[in-house]
Amino acid sequence: MTTEHRKGIISFSISDKGALYASYMQFLQNGGVFVPTTTPYQLGDSVFMLLKLMDANNPIPVEGTIAWVTPAGAQGNKTQGVGVHFGEEPTAKRTIEDVLAATLNSDRPTHTM
Image (cartoon, rainbow, N blue to C red; front, side, top):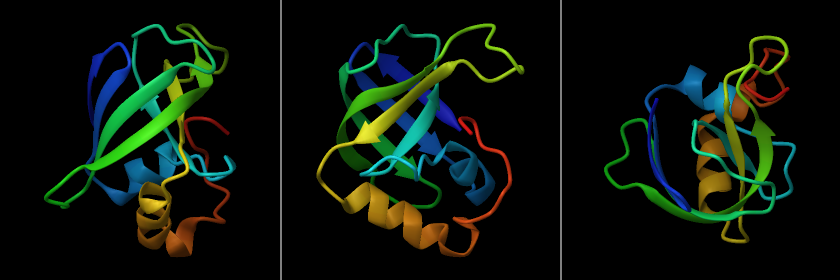
């Protein structure tokens, strides 16, 4: 996984299915991903993300909002970062759920729950 940021703009690459599973936030209405970052965001902040999944040639453009914040030093040694709730455009959610179809209902831990 690699992440690049400018406040409000996130470029996030997920290189394998295990990392995608750990980052995906299926419990959000439109889906979302957890992005490791030290950049400070607040709940409700609007962001634009370029999400590159594994071997895809082109990133998926995603407008979203910050729906989760894990601060530095969070209990349980959780990774610092934010959860980006995808906007109304269903491309990112559909693409991720197609890749993770068989593992979506797994009880393996993720970065958020």
